[in-house]
Length: 335
Image 1: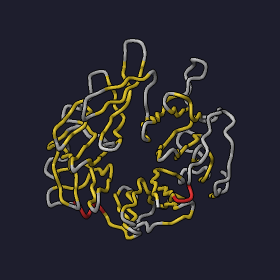
Image 2: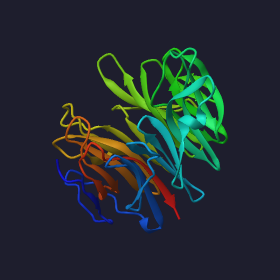
Image 3: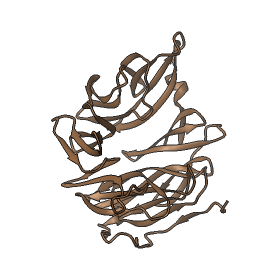
Image 4: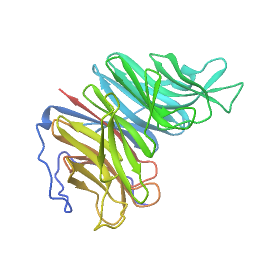
């Protein structure tokens, strides 16, 4: 095993030999880049490559899964062992204890979003009297709203967005069907569609994923509010908007042969292709004012490999290969 090394490369440009479409940075000096992750088994985040180790809350291991900065407050959502944690400006809260009720305990908390001064979480509560069923709920500043009761099915990738005080939750209904709850009203994903998540564009919300045909798999993204759907030649694993530009994450097509390499398309033109020789996951993708921020995990073994933060396809941060090292989530702040 290689010695654990964190290499901070302050805008040191490393060219991508397999990509000819590299954008130049656009006024990055006024932007703060936050990255949430884990270093040597401890929840950590980086601000402009400066490493901040978080209090692990007394747990033997912890990880930071998501980071949001709002009104100069830094919110980090993660876990300590199997317990869900919130760090607000470094102060840690045990969410399992915070949200526990006399007859319910937290089973999963899957996402966090901040809207103004309001803090939202989405997750599942398990009944102590009927532990095989679950309630899908969200919490706003600690106050619970129930979306579904007595669920048999759970969706561990459930996520939440807030637009104009409307609450959008990507999850499953009690028939194990994926869809988007709009203020608790369920909108199912079309038959034959596999949805992987939701994202926003200004005051609109989109879901995206795959369409399973008789002999092939194509992709789609759909405006949940208007119902307008756009199809794509390839399955869409992630989706980001930047004004009029559309970025999609797809599998790279190596001369019409199956490949485990990923590719980012900008307006359906190749923007980034993961290196040859191993599988590469594009863990997170954010785009703001023409700048593209990407976390890439290069899988050397089944579960781990080097984690890299790329800005406009230039390597900015490297977290070395180790099963306890991960970069998970990006948040961008314009000053």
